[in-house]
Every structure is written in C-alpha cells, then in structure tokens.
Amino acid sequence: MAHCVQTQRVMRTPDRIHPPLREPGLVTGGDRSPTPTKWHHRFARVEGVRLHWAELGVSTAKPPLVLLHGLNDCYRTWRQLGPRLAGDRRVLMPDLPGHGLSARPDASYELRWYAHVMARWLEAAGVEHADLVGHSLGGGVAQMMLLECPERIRRLVLVSSGGLGRQIAVSLRLASIPFVVERLGQPFMGPCTRLAVKLTGDVLSNEDTARLCAINAQSGSARAFARTVRDIVDWRGQRRTFFQRAHELSTLPPIAVFWGERDTVIPISHAEALAKAVDGVRVTRFEACGHYPHHEKPDAFVAALRDFLDSTDVRPARLRREVSGRAGACRNADAPANLVPLQNCR
Image (cartoon, rainbow, N blue to C red; front, side):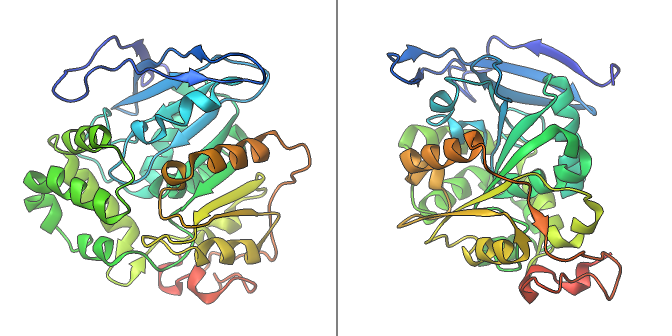
C-alpha cells in the first residue's frame, strides 16, 4: 500500500472554507479537572483520494474510536462529542470522500467504494483495531466495512443508520432522480444544506450551519451527493440493506443501535427490525429526539456510547438464521419483509 498511502500533518486550510482548523475543546476524565484538548488535522492520499480527518486524544490500552458522519455532513458533526470521548482513547473523525475537507473526485460514490476507501484509510491512519460509530450514511458505510476489513472492527455502533430497511425521507427519494442534482444542483448546495438543517430539527448552531453550507458549496459536492444518493436510494426507498450481503460475514462484532424516536429521515422501526433479526443487538432509544441524537441528546448519547464500548459483558452479534444472497433466496426468514427488498439481491 506504500504507493497509495501518504500521510502529512496539515497546519491550515483556506479561511474561506473553514477558519480556523484548530478547535477548542475540553476533556473530563474521572475526577480530573478539564484539560485543553489539541485538535490535529491531517490528510492522507488513499486510493488516489485526498482524505481529511480530525484527531483527538492519544493511544491507550483502549482501541481507537472512529466516528463516521452522515450524508452532506462533515467531521464537525462530532465537534462537541469528540473532546468528551478522547479522555481515555484516541478519537478519529474523518471526512468521507466527497464531504467536508476531503477531495471530491470524479468517482462512483457507490457504498462499496466508500467502504473500500475508508478501509484503506484505517491503514493510513495507523488504526489496526477500532470501535466504529456510523451516523446515517456513515452507518451504511460502516456496515459495508464489515466486508472490507472485519478484522479491524472490534465493536460497531449504528446511529440512525441507513441500510437497515426500505423507508427513507421523500426528499432523498426525489434527489435520486438521475442527473438532475448532479448537472444542475451545484449552485444550490449551500442553500439546500441550510434548508435540510432546518427541516431535520435545526440542531446546529448558526456558526456550524454557516460552515457546513460553505463546505457543501465547494465544487464537486453536488456530484458526490447525487451519485451517493443514486446508489443507495430510488423512488421507492433505500436500495441497499445489511441482509443482502450478511451471508458473506462469518462473524459479526458486538453491535449497538442508537435512534431518535422522532426521526423523520429514517424511522426507528429499522432499529427494532434489526434487533429482531440479529441476536445480541443492543438498541438505545432517545425520547423526543430526531435524526441527530448526538446533537439533540449529547449527554445521554455519550453515556450510552461509553457504556457499550467499555462493557465487559457484550457478546458478538449473530444472525438468527443463515441469509443466502442468491436470487430468490436472499431473505432472512426471521427478518421483517421490509429489511430485504428482493429485487436488489445479487
């Protein structure tokens, strides 16, 4: 991999996109007083894509924690939580390809492509074994990474995750119409980001909203967004589900699912359906909470995450019945019908 992995520390980026890179933060650990946390911003070229990630904390006996953001989001979605989680471990918050401060190449943006690039990124970042958290699209990427690099994932947390059922917001179904967003949408990426933030609960501060709008207004964002949506969503809903390829996994890590009870983007019923089909899945419901529990209920979110990651009595998840990926026989017999759209089985 030496030819495709090159890492360098980054001191600054253009102020018009993200001023400044160094973020303030506090870490509280046990009875210790809060101490300043230094944010490190790094880039690596992986599979020809220049990727950015923010990093907090230092390596300890605990495995690193990797936090994957959702569609049209960036590493800053974890800005308030990262320092609170980095008191006893290394925390890495990457920008997915086509997002944040990472490059926006002319690529397929298929889910398996994301997973392949991010699996190689773990190598670039020196992460041999990690706990993985994925929100929304990041949850779908995390699921696919179980196929790419299962040996690197110790525990998996899916937050309001894609890829667990058919239903999804109408706005994303409309965005899947071929070529409309990709060819015409770039001038509207900033304003549409602001609208999306408002429609999903207005959970960001004015500063964070302004920065996310500026980031998503960068050239190439509409292409990345459109191709991503087109791969995972059609007019009927989500096209990719966990169970389509679950049969390829010989083992599963311990899995937790976090979901807001009032999620209007992806319904909480997907979490419940997964728990019924897979033994050992821990489901945490957040009351009076929408699609972003890490923003809306940060204290409860951190407590639940720490409890799962540090627990000594969790066990690997297990499919209740072997799932065949062959055409005509790809449904898990114990899974609700909406988990596995048969027309997408390969």
